[in-house]
Length: 480
Image (cartoon, rainbow, N blue to C red; front, top):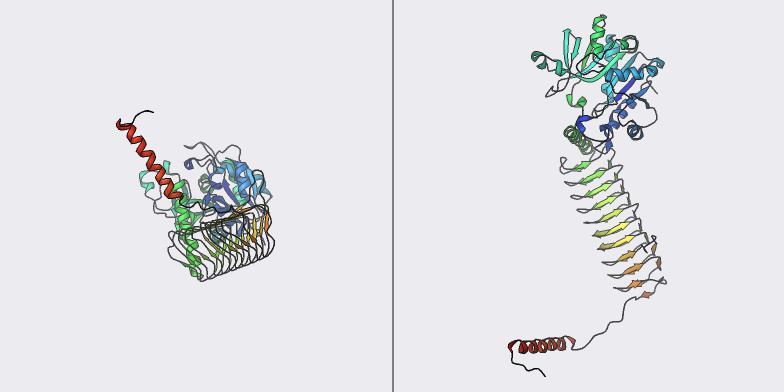
């Protein structure tokens, strides 16, 4: 149920200049999710009366990427600063009934819902006009410094470019996240001015305005500065990714997952892994992947948007995307599964085998150098090395149906559409273009011909030819 006593406004209209991108930084991927999605999720979990996002640069793309129930977009067509963003959102804020408004920058992916709720609680307890979420980062460079008038009261927030040498030494800075009394905000919002070095309406100027009206402005220091560090360029994006991935790895390990090297495992935020699973170095678990219990995923394998049942063994350098793998399956090494492949329990997909848009039955084995595309394989099928389901005729894809208990010899070409009946055998090296009845042997290859003494005679002919050419070159022969 929504907490009806505060609203949240996410400021997301900027051009992301330092990202040097044609796209808003909020749509760039971070640990498997768009950057802006982290703040949206944290804000929604706080259950505010209203959640607004002010968009501007690449607004359509941001809307399409981040839209979800409970989030309302407000467009700031002219990006004239953070204060101007709240001016644009004013009609929506006037409709709210809650006592507080939280302004949140959109590029702080580590922000926790608990911190937002604590900020609102402190704000309401102190009855302040504004409460600033502050931090003491390792380097205050780029952040507005907090100037105090005594105790917790804040006199001003000074942008770095306007700081004196002494003010630059101040360790406490503004995170860009502020909680306002809604009534005070709406009453004094129009007093903001763009007569400053940035030529913008700055939200932090409200601190000076509130002091002018003898209203209280306090701070709420965050315990961990990393939680509210902004992502302003690709370097900071990578730093945030490293933190998020380590947090994910630590959470999984505490729930019974072995991760041999958390620094090299790449595990997205939405991934689920069962206990007693072992994840080797260099493994990537991406998207909405779910891995069962007791699995082993060996080095440099990638599992993306896929489901792995219990006790699956993924051998090195295997790639699985958009597939469902049953329990007790062995994959790889160097296997590739894609496009909705389904592997039933106990099947074996071995080295350099590709399975595309196919269903492989229980206990079926394809151990070596095979392509299974648009195929359905029954139970206990044996697929020999070098087998190919020839699914494409130049115009469309065609199915191959291999029924239970079929034995396919090595080097066979199964030209779809074709059906191999239950219990049938396909001789090695065959090209199968017609259906094979159940329990039949299909031989689709040319008859072998042995030419006796061919090699000896071939060598003799070559020797004779060389002798003749040699005589002519030495001038010992005569023209006839």
